[in-house]
Image (cartoon, rainbow, N blue to C red; front, side, top):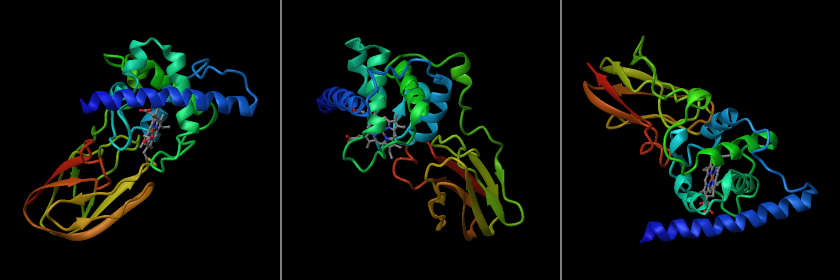
Length: 243
Ligand code: HEC
């Protein structure tokens, strides 16, 4: 089957990545480092959600990005083959520094100890069933926890999740029919926009700052969503009621 084949080719590529990572370490003159040593996995989880989650599914991190491979699937065989957290962390760490020729995954999204923290977190949870507990569970708030957005003086503000998750803080909104300015503050560093389906109101895409667009609302129920590929499917949607 296609998916199984993909998983195998990923594992093969993952093995190649170990070689790349080791080569990189030799070049930089370090010894065989263990990214999990003294790693702060709570920080690693926060950084993973912010810097990686918009492109990767990782069940325990609650991330839903689909631009890159699903990281639970990517490391399932490695887990069965008992590479151990250290082995998996080495691959993730290598991938962060040397993502290869793909233009889709930028190199060095996190650096130094941050990269080790991310690698250690992914290694601790990828393809591990269950849920994060304790400090890890509390590391990143559940997205979409905000009160409904309410239009005020012609302005409707709906915030992108500040932690980089594929969600808006407000999952429902209300407005009155007529002219409106739609605003989307985005503190996450992940590119997002907001569009109201069927209303011809769409902001530009921003990584930080506030995106805004003007238009006119008619009464009805509408869906608002992020048009960056994969983000709507990942959960970046909400319902707007116009009266
Ligand atoms: C802009 C999207 C994007 C971001 C952000 C991103 N990745 Fe990726 N990642 C990809 C893509 C696409 C691939 C597949 C590369 C390829 O085709 O070879 C990938 C591959 C990987 C792989 C290899 C998986 C496998 O199947 O071999 C790992 C591990 C990984 N990424 C980890 C991370 C980590 C950790 C971060 C955050 C520091 C991150 N990625 C951020 C897009 C992204």
